[in-house]
Amino acid sequence: MASSPSHQTHIPLSSDPDGKPIDSVVPIHIVTNASQLPAEFLEPSSERQLVIGFDCEGVDLCRHGSLCIMQLAFPDAIYLVDAIQGGETVVKACKPALESSYITKVIHDCKRDSEALYFQFGIKLHNVVDTQIAYSLIEEQEGRKRSPDDYISFVGLLADPRYCGISYQEKEEVRVLLRQDPQFWTYRPLTELMVRAAADDVRFLPYIYHNMMKKLNQQSLWYLAVRGALYCRCFCINENDYVDWPPLPPVPDYLIVEGDVPEEEILSILDVPPGKMGRIIGRRGSSILAIKESCNAEILIGGAKGPPDKDESLHVHCDVGV
Image 1 (cartoon, rainbow, N blue to C red):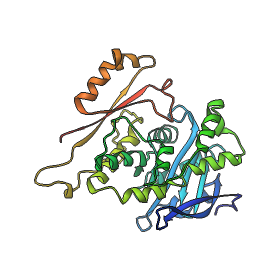
Image 2: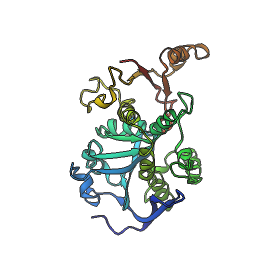
Image 3: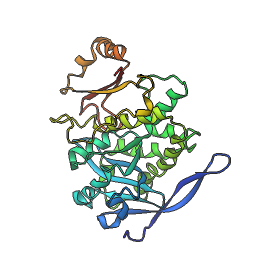
């Protein structure tokens, strides 16, 4: 059982008639031992499927950096899994849950978190709902045009009244501190600011998830599952072509109408040697633009949680006919 918490926060659980979140006060547990985590999380079961908010904090969060904290948002509590004081043991105790199909992990931009978990702890993050992907799918579904590379930030998502309508100005305060001191998340004991910032990154996610699920149609839900699985893998380049990862979701029968099926999702990986990204991009971006135009591709270089100047991975996501 978790020890008596000294921190609390608010989690939105439902909406009032005007659509404003109704909050519930919940404890924040700092976890250094697996016994402090809920049993239903440590031992996933088809009889009790869970939806939790999920995020990671660290230093240069990617394969080469350091994962310092994993945040888990449940309806009745938030758990901050301390990978520094709890070490590899407490993180690996979460492996069955993070790889389970019975626990839905709601996360905003899963790519670098998945990379860190895979290369640092051998965990293959699975069954995610990426709210960044979901937002884009809803925009497409409702006919709003956007640039293929235009991804909503977490702060922007929180501010959208359709999903949460919350101002998150404190996020910039933490960003400033991280720029001043990249080792911010390594210091112990955790300060009040660190606890609050870590909890803030997950406490709204289950509420946003439920609001998004109401809007997504069946085809978008399938795309969400496939893209979430692809994005979990996108920086986890390995030599076995992901044969040890769970299979990608197949096209459901109900989406096949008179031989017409949704477009296939393809993710291509280019692991670019340091200093060579310019050759891939081409003069004035000519090479990248040619790829984008040929297959309506989304192209991401580096990432918000990983330093593009140190890790010049690039992935290309495109839709083509089956």
